Image (cartoon, rainbow, N blue to C red):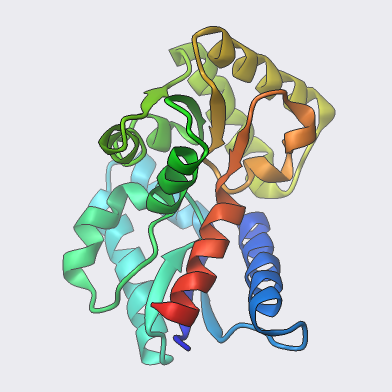
Length: 230
């Protein structure tokens, strides 16, 4: 079995959920008394966010690289980010580190493809919604990605940073998200990717009529599979 290096803290509520799900799914695979071999490197998300918002992407990337290298020093055989948004930097990070990773968008694109959908909506932080790391992978599988309007992108992003990453989950924000999701459905979405690892803590399948792809759960299952089988 391979040891996981989990880069957490972006934000901590989803990192907590990753820890719970990884151990749950590992126990499902190996027996309930088992827990997963992992090290967690928790970064200060506010510092990371200040770097990206001020255009200091190189510093933000180095912060992630340092975290991955810390995991390697602790014996990690591979790494994963407990967040969607930081994956937009992964193509720049991979040449700088010596560990393989499990990419959240690869796992999610596979799940959407296996569900037989051809058009999906994407929710997440603005950096995720504006990036190509989801649409590109989905397009390779013949799947079209629908992105919310600029106004809706701002709303979704604002709620994530002002509430969800601070462990605040309100009915008012859930209602606003559901309105955005209905607009994506009206535009032709057959399903919705919850492309921020805090969103599944606010919205679940019982809240919406279209298939929802909770990226936290999908990613954690893929991480456990990699740890066990490579």
